[in-house]
Length: 333
Image (cartoon, rainbow, N blue to C red; front, side, top):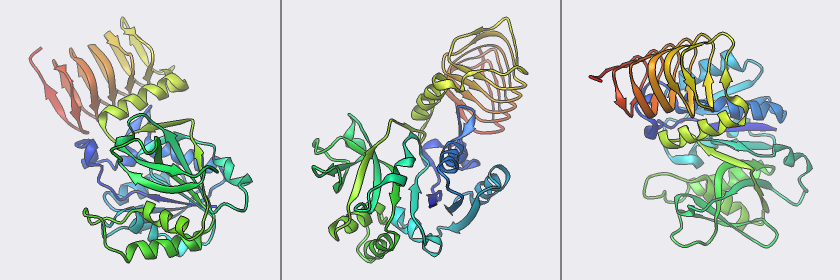
């Protein structure tokens, strides 16, 4: 089994952080979002991955080569931004096996081992999560046997609450690429994009059964608010704590927090839901719902609902910040 991971997007909802950091490498719970996905793949036995890159693709390649040398990695540049169908189509030269297709805007709790016992009658699996705010997502309408009938993008009426989360297993890869060719040969959506879900519809219309499987959890990392919510989930699920090499003096810690090695905290209050990256220094400050990158300094500030990059300096600020690496913000308070 091989994996295809499209990564070409610019991550505009996470700007300014994604001006210099690819969205998959933005950190949550002390680690890049993509690390959680790659660890799941390796645990499932995947050793070969096709990365569809574009914006800041060299940064992604350097990260993979340094942190995941055990993977046989292929890189394809998506030069034409023609959507998810166009991205996956670029992986065709390596797609001679069962495929996992994953989008790394989210972290998921899914049982990938399901594919090992999947009945031969199924051409693949689409994982889904039941949600209340169904209008924000593509939702899956199922048949009585829990196979896909169709996917409806952002419905105005509650035709289904099963959100398509961007995690797929395809056993019949030849039919998938036949479907992609058909999709790319049709008129594009008004945005100029071609959707992978249209290829799945082609497969279903030509007799394929795509099983819909639930996920236990699905945690969005695509914008500041959801990134902070996911950070809280990760800290509450065992990633929180204070590293032995960190120093906390005369400061109140309100769980959950993650204080990494080399951090110095003196005075103030940290938490809840705060991650402080390696080597940062927090002095006489109050932080709540904040992610601080590596090597940053925060002095005499009160911050909430904030994302600070690495090597940032903040002094005398009271409020909410979202600043990228190497920024400086000085206030009057």
